Length: 391
Image 1 (cartoon, rainbow, N blue to C red):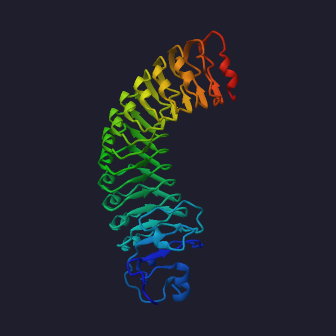
Image 2 (image 1 turned 90 degrees about the vertical axis):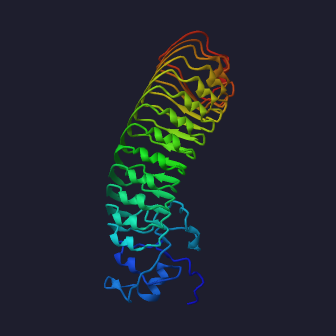
Image 3 (image 1 turned 135 degrees about the horizontal axis):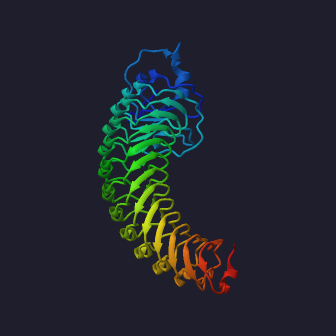
């Protein structure tokens, strides 16, 4: 067969019903881009579980176990496939022989039933740029050898049963841009070495059992747009260094044990659209500086121990659609400026110690669908503008 793709060694195992991961694939004697289905028809790949021809090392650039709609698999090199329902049903452990695929750049074994640990031999794949092992039944710890993958750009291990610490060696992955570790059973503290990953764009490490403080070294991650650490057991203060992350768009730290004040430096995150700090033990006043977040759409500070008055500066958040301040110890008047937030869809300020009357103009924009102010000490007339509410 004519060789037109000498630089593209691709093995695509999509849309099959393979029962297990064949260890001999570490020695596949095949040098061209071809789907496994065609390969098996032409060469009878297995005979009694072994290769039907003499093996020699084969250098894969891309190993994709995802079904997809592309007929040109080379488009997946160095990029992530779109999540979709897997047509394979691979199970058992990932064999250590995978470490023989020394030129592999893209490895995706997602949405299967792999079990056991991630083999330490993964660390031998030093050309790997993308590693996806998501939605399997993998357990054990993340091998520290992953820190040897100096070319790694995207690491996705979410929705498994991984436990133990996040290896400090991940701090060696200087090219890493996307880190997805959520929905596992990871524990222990977040290593401060994570602050070395200055190319990181997104961190999703939520829904684990992480403890200890958020490292102040996260303030070094100037390219970060998403930081999701919610639903863990993190404690200590929110480091003011988070305010250095000028590219941040989403900050979600809810359902932890964080305490202390909300740092005023969060007001420097001018591109922030989502701020979720609810269900912690945060105390002190809501900083006036939060009113600087003109792009903010979703602000949720409920279920803390916040006190003092609601800042008048919140009236500057003209893009705000959801505002949750319930279940705190807020006192004083509800500022009239809240009535100017015409895009508000949800406003919950119940279960506080607020007094006085409701702001004139509340629901003037007609967008408000849910509005709760119960369990306060409010008095005075009900504003006529409430007739515009959808609730």
